[in-house]
Amino acid sequence: MERDEIYELLGEVFRHYPNFDISEKAVDRHLEFLSDMPLEVALRNVRMHVKDSVYPPKIAEIRAGWNNYAERMAKAAQQHIAEQEERRKHVVPPSQEVRGQIAALKQRMAAKQSGS
Image (cartoon, rainbow, N blue to C red):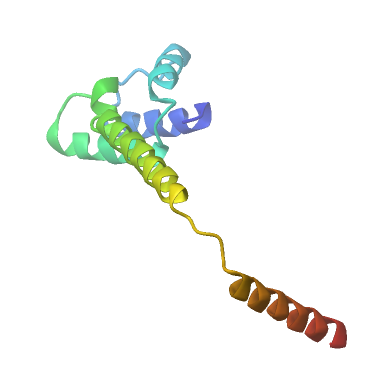
């Protein structure tokens, strides 16, 4: 999140908890700990929190679930990359016949473009 998004987030919290601290110091503190997560996720967490608590959310409550999600996505990305690397080991180049077909297709396409 960027600073302007933190303002939006804290504004949403303030709407529900009028005594919530929205000072520049509070903005700085929230920016420090929430900059790695999307505004949409933080807003969703705040709105869920409002339904269940008469107290304003702590930073940890705004972050709820984000660390686990980010870790799962990072692991999934690493696994995907490893699978792609494994597949690359078994790639077979196209045969001469297929290369010839591709070259012929390119020639026909070039002829169509120059004839248009």
